[in-house]
Structure formats: structure tokens, C-alpha cells
Amino acid sequence: MTQLSRRGSPRLTFLVLAAGAGSFALLQSLITPVLPTIQHHLHTSQNTVTWVLTAYLLSASVFTPILGRVGDKVGKERMLVVSLAALALGCLLAAVAPSIGLLIAARIVQGVGGAVFPLSFGIIRDEFPPARVSSAVATISAIVAVGSGLGVVLAGPIVTALDYRWLFWIPMVVVGVTAVAARLFVPESPVRNPARIDARAALLLSGWLVALLLPVSKAATWGWTSGRVLGLLALAVLLLAGWLVVEIRSAAPLIDLRMMRLPGVWTTNLVALLYGASMFSLFAFLPQFVQTPAAAGYGFGASVSQAGLLMLPMLVAMFVAGMLAGRLEHRFGPRAQLITGAAFNLLASALLVVAHDTRWQIGVAGGLVGLGIGLAFASMANLIVANVSARETGAATGMNANIRTIGGAMGAAVVSGVITAHPQANGLPREAGFTLGFVVLAGLALAAVLAALTVPSSPRRAGAHRRPSSAPEPVAGPAVADLAAAELAAVEVTPVAAGR
Image (cartoon, rainbow, N blue to C red; front, top):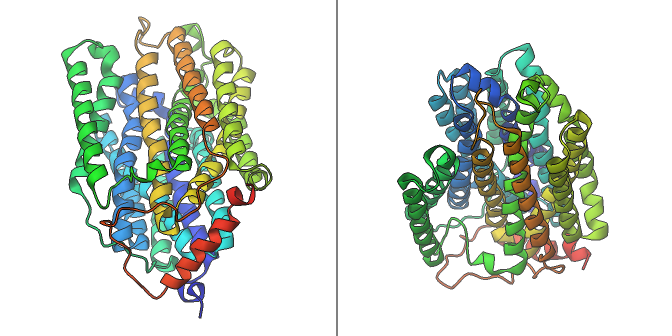
């Protein structure tokens, strides 16, 4: 009897994983078009309401590697259910939150769901036939990309017909059903890593991220030379240094910095960091730009629904590019696809710097962003898969998704500070603030293109990377021989290997 016949249906497993990953991606962007609505309803500032997005990304940045590591220890299926349950609970809390503080806290709970990415990729590598691993990873990545864009479009009709709180009620039901389906239908992997979880690394990771993002987002209000900003930035440097030391010395690090020595891994992760910073900021601030009243001297005074329609070209382009990504990758290779995707993002950001006065310009820029995301997401995932061994797939792909999320949290905080630094007398940002924000995004996009050019065209063979002998091996199980064979075969069937 084969491993798969004992483990269940790959097709049903894939559908559940796709639903979970898509739901988390949807919640990343579903809120961004309604940030002005939430700001008005909860009587807060634009700088503060941006933390509804930033807190979600920050929480995901911390919990993604933690729960990914716990999944390696106690079971990926079990932790997938926990992650989805936390996401559903966060939706419930957000739906009833009476204040901005409680809404931000609810979004922190939702961020726990970010672990669905490494857990899903790990389950795919454990359970799927080798020939299907690459395409399944690419498809999940495309679903994540489309989900991120779909939220921007769906938010308007939902808010218009119901209320912004239904942006949490509806996902709560979907995620809850997905959690039950994961418990019933997703097989539990026999692969285990008994290494302990390093609590120091988790605390230091969360500490330096908060100490960095808080002063960056508040610097416009506090002043860049204020004691609070300089003190927190100094603390961030110290905590970062401590975290690096702990992670390097740990036998079971949350984010394996030793794996980052592989050229195909660290270069792809650098692209993910820069790409995430640019992409999430566009998701957050482009809808706000088009909703700005024309009385401010710019913007279109669009409603939430109209803002969603202006983002529709982004979604369509993202869907088309995502569907074509697999074929293009087999033909041209993931490196070329990643460079092209990053170049589309650069072109969109540059266009917004010089042309944002008409709706069609916004639509064209959004379409270019969508093409870039659809191409880049799948290629990043497959570049990582092609460069690491089978047992490292979950950790490595989770690290890539997590680094992209960290970039998003940083980018959103930086761009928010730039845009809101010098508001008008009526409290609205100046057009120059948005223009400078688009310049920052263009700079990040250019850096992502340059980083993509450094990605090796030929990956290091999976399995070439080895931890020091102190690192524990997975507990042997009945499927070890099958997994070893799958690892060797997967090296030959990934699109990267095929395109060498």
C-alpha cells in the first residue's frame, strides 16, 4: 500500500489547504479599502487606523515561524486546525470590537492564522506525489495572490450592502468550516522533528519587530529626533542582535539563518522582503488615495465600492498571470518569471509617481501590479522548494512567506509615516505625501528587481544543505523511505530543475 493510499485524497487535501491559505490572504486586503470608514466610525486618526493592517502583518510575522516549528514537532495537521481556529476567533472579536484598540487586538489574534502557509506547503511536500509538488505549491501561491487582490474588490459591495463588520462575520464562517474540514480530511504527516521550541527566539523576534515598527509609524507625530523614537530604534537594534545570536546558535531555530547561506534561498528571501514592503503598501494606500475627496486637491472621492472597481484590473491581471504562471515557469524558468514580476511592480510604482490624476491611470497601474504579483508569488515558492531538501520545505517556504509579511509590515509602517507626516488643516494627507509615498514604493520595487537579478539561475540540489550534527533528525516512521524517494525525485521534476 502506498503512502498516499494510507493518507487520504490529495485532491481533497489540496482543496482544504487552498481554502485556508486563500482565506488568510483575503483578510490581508479585505480591510484596506475600508480603513477610512473604520477611521470615521471608531473616531481615530489615519496613522492609528493603519495599524489595523500593520498589527495583522506583525502578528503573522511572529506566529508564522513559531507555529510552523510547533507543527514540525506535534503535527502539521493539528497546528493547521489551531491556526484556522485562531483566525476564526480573531474574526469574531473584530466583528464585535467597539473601539480601535480592541479591533487592533483582534487583528493580532487573526495574524496567528499566518501559519497556514508553512503548514500547507509542508503538508503538500509530505503527502503529494513528487511530480505534483511543484504545481501544487505554485497553485497555492497563485490562490494566495488572487485572494490578496480579491479582498480589495469584494470589500465595497459587502460594506455597501451590509456593514464593515460583515468583512469579519463572513470570513469567520468560511474559516470555521475550513477548520472543521481540515480536522476531518487533511492527513496527519508521520514526519516529526522532536526539537524543542526556543522561547527566547520568539520573544526577541516579536520584540525587535515591535520596537522597529512603532517608532517608524509614529515618527511623524513624535519627531524623528525625539527620545521615544531614538530609544525604540536603539532597542530594536539590540533585540535584533540578540535574536540573530540566539537563532544562529539554536539547534532548531524559528527562522533558519543557516539555510539562508544557500544563494538560491537568501536571494529569493531578499526579493520577498522588498516585494512584500511594496505590495502591501500599495494594497493599503492606493484605495485610500482614490477615496480622498476631490476637495483635498487630488483624489476622486470614490466610495468603497468605486475604489474596489478601480482595483478590479489588478485582480483580473493577477488571476490571469497566476493561471499562466505554471506554463511560463516551465518554459522560461522561475528566475526569469520573478524578475519579470518585480519589473511589472516597478513600472506600476513609477507610473503612480508621475501619473495619478485620472481613473484610467490608477487602473493601468493596478493591472501592472496584478501581473507582477501573479508571476512573482509562484516563482518565489518554487525557487525555495527547488533549493532545499524535502524535510526543510515547510520551514523554508514558511520563512519566505514570513519574510514577505515582515517586509509588508515594515513597508506599511514606513509609507504610512511618509504619507501622514504633514497633513492639511482638514486632517487629510497632502498630495505631496502620497507622491513621496509612491516614490518610496518605486525605490523598494527597484531594489526588488536588482535583488531578483542576483537569484541563481541554477539551484543548488535539494538535500545539499545540511544542518550541523547537533540538529536533531526527524523521528523515523513508516513513510521515511517513501519520503526519501520523493525528495530525490522532486529534485528532477521542479520547474527550476527542468529549466537548467
